Amino acid sequence: MSQDRQTQSRAETLRKRREEEHKRRETLTQKLTRQPAAATTRAKKSAPRSSPTVTPGRLRRRYDAAMSQPSPYYGRASSRGSFQAPDIAISIPKVEFGPRWISFLILIVCAAALVNMWTMDPFIVRSAEIHGNVRIGTPEIVAALGVINHPAALLNPDQIVYNLQYSFPDISAVQIETFLPAGLIVTIVERQPIVAWNQDGKTVWLDAQGFAFPPRGEIDTLVTITAAGSPPALGDGTDVSQTVGARPFLSSELATAITGLSAVLPDGASLVYDPKYGMGWEDPGGWRAFFGSAPGDMNTKLLVYKNLVNYLSENNIQPQLISVEFPNAPFYRVEQ
Image (tube, rainbow, N blue to C red; front, side, top):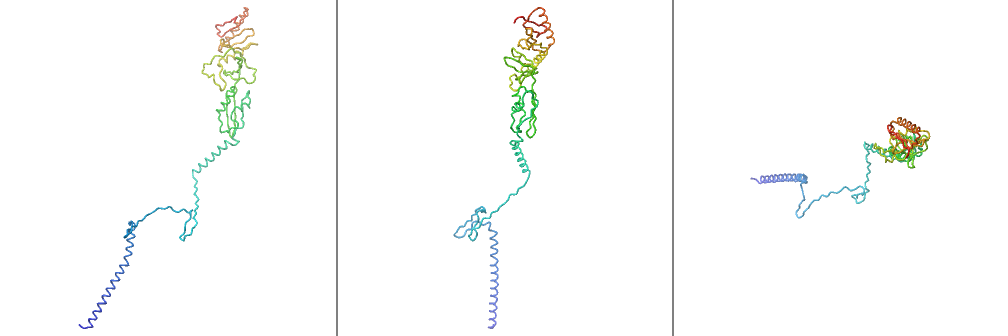
């Protein structure tokens, strides 16, 4: 083999080696260029799973601390070290109107109305209209009502009736009418006395139902009775110890008997009552006549009485007492 041919073979061999070396380097460079990106991707994917990182000769641990957001009212420091003014945020609450607001407004209106009714003059009772009184003066009734200069909202009709009947037993009935803003009308019914009952130096008036009450004024048409004792006790369950209003004094039957006797009373005679003999009168002839306590058979009793008086007059007998309580068995006494 010639020398030129050997030199050409060596040159081709070197050239091939250089080309292979160059390819090998390009391949290595491409691998090195792709490897960091893949490593970074694998690091990102596995980062959440990583825990404390251990490096040769040193232990590192990670600590997470929760901190509140800094208040805007205290300001903050900038990255350059200067202090910046705090950010003040003003927020206006949003007001929404609903059923609760309506209820609140109604409550306010009602409260204001109550305050006005308790304090304002139009709602304060300053006077009252009184009707039906004859013997009792209007100023006395107004003073006894107990409501003057008080709020009209506090008016209690039952209390007003109690006050009037407690102060005036001669009132039998009371009617109360109220109207806005502070009007008050009081209508009363007075008891009509028919008898003036004198006993133990005291006088009470009696009406047709037998109720007693203190005298008030003067009435010329009253029948006056002088009593030697109290009338029979009432057996109808009436409470004679009551202190409000007129108290029951005698039965309505006895009151009727008194009215009947007063109609036939002789001139100059005066009615009397004796617990033992009942109702009667002091006769101008000088004796006392008794007719009992029951109003029944009054006509028969009067007829028997007249016949008995005629008999005693014809026989010149001066009686001291004549009793016709029992028409079938009348009697008389000549001495007490």
